[in-house]
Image (cartoon, rainbow, N blue to C red; front, side, top):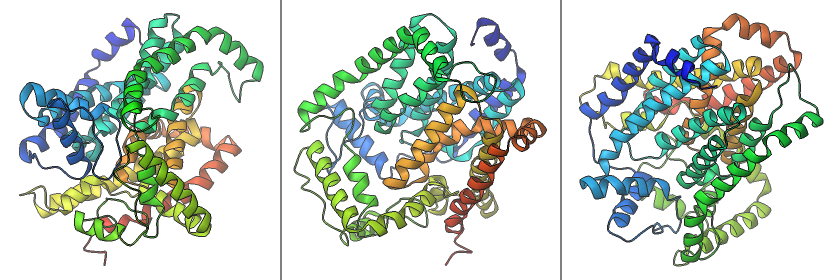
Length: 468
């Protein structure tokens, strides 16, 4: 429980303050050395929408006919109104990322030990891609914060009888959906984590789940009510405006169109993505034409979904063959930061430092993916397993069906910091737990080789001196 005593212990931990200093340094340094007002793809879309909102026009559809969740465009509109520029949101994102560092410290401490909490916070602090994203107009920093906060609040709801904590969880999860529509289907994992009965080992019996449901029924009711109330005003207004029922976004058809077409699944990472709008436009012209973009966003999305179903029915083998391709795109150990480094966006950076940074990005991703998963098989138990594991599996499943990009992986990397931390902080205990369970050991032996294949699939693309 996040009690006053626990808070005092955390804030008196000098290691936490050192880690926060490191986190602040790696987030502010790029802003000082390479401050930019340029935008890339979705950044430009969010900024354009924010300007339209600030001028009183509200949310509008993109030129390609899809409508993102409203949270981030509206957030960008606030500094546009107050300060005349959307760029000042980056200061807020630095603060939010520092809070996320503290949340990971708390989660690692709560789930395992204080040492694990320190290492988890440090891993998050020095993750180069996560740090760099605070200097962009992408949604990942804020969405990761909301996800981590929801995990912390779920633990608090489990432990406390005060319904205000349940209301806070509902509001947080509602905000997550308003910022990213993919969060719509995450609540079941958090509900299971909330209801999970205390058990020494193994899966609790059904009777224990029923008893837990009775205990937490009011909390669940408050959580669901606040979640719905948080989302409903925008959902109702947007449904009336954009051609039919939508919760917070109308993007499903668009992403299915990009990942299930006559051309190869599209991504926007360095070496395997579209380098500019011209190449992107030429690529999509080789596939089936999109639905009428003059239709409202909801109707356009439904049209695309219908056409994708027809395409899959006509090309079932191609659809199945592309699943590992999309998953490999997701696990590409290079990142959007690699793309910006290779594009020359960081002027003046020495060659050796540039190569070190690209290597650091790869090592960070490989360590979290492989080391974190190994530790998860050995030590993952309890509510955190349901939330972190459920989110990871769900995110990979969505990627397998639609299309993959490395930035979709960042919230999962944040959650996986706890598992890599327990491997680094308590290697013997982790290995012992893994080898003492044949089921867990078998799971690790089955999944780790597959993950390694997915990780190395596109690894060479980040290093053009070796890739032709």
